[in-house]
Length: 243
Ligand code: ADE
Image 1 (cartoon, helix red, strand yellow):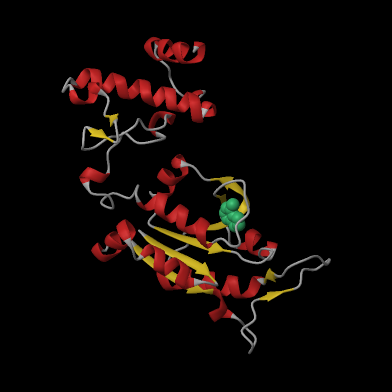
Image 2 (cartoon, rainbow, N blue to C red):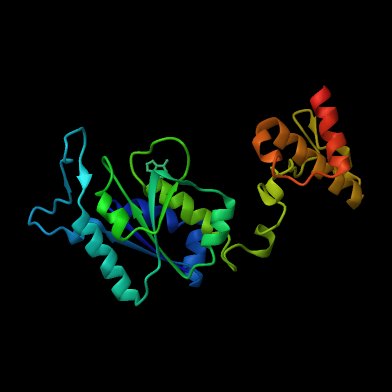
């Protein structure tokens, strides 16, 4: 899977993606990261890519032309017209299902804005998806692009090793993940729950399901509405709600 990131700050993207799991996948050739500096497509001799907003107001707006030229160049070079994702607080809020869906693409183009945003005509002409990573405003789209790339990449086959890619993780089945422990059995007076040391797999599975349900009820009750609850699940939750 190849990502093309249009940005004014390519070093932010390159530095992050070349480390850890994404860096390893790039070395193996499973993922390709290509940053494209929007400034390289400036059409004036000063290299300016932004201008004052029509109608007045604070801040500067990135002009349509350099972004459009950069986007056309990427599409021409790869001989394809992939989805173009603009990172913006006005987009659809990103979640695990979107990560899984995007992981099926062979190429993605991501567009990072800065200042007060980009000329709206780019959204009409070139952008296929607007994505927000949450209800807060960042100084630019780079961190949001990195979040999306990271979450999508770990869904691409071969990026995670077998031991890294367990299915029991948060948001599978709309439940948060259960608590995890490793050695030692006791640390600073705090013990690992006995059931995890029992070797009784069915009991461990049941305990983990209960913990996932309780955590979700406590921290993300909104998610519970989407969970298919069994009779036993309801009993666990009833105990929790009554206490
Ligand atoms: N750019 C600025 N804030 C953002 C957000 N919350 N999500 C995506 N892109 C952004």
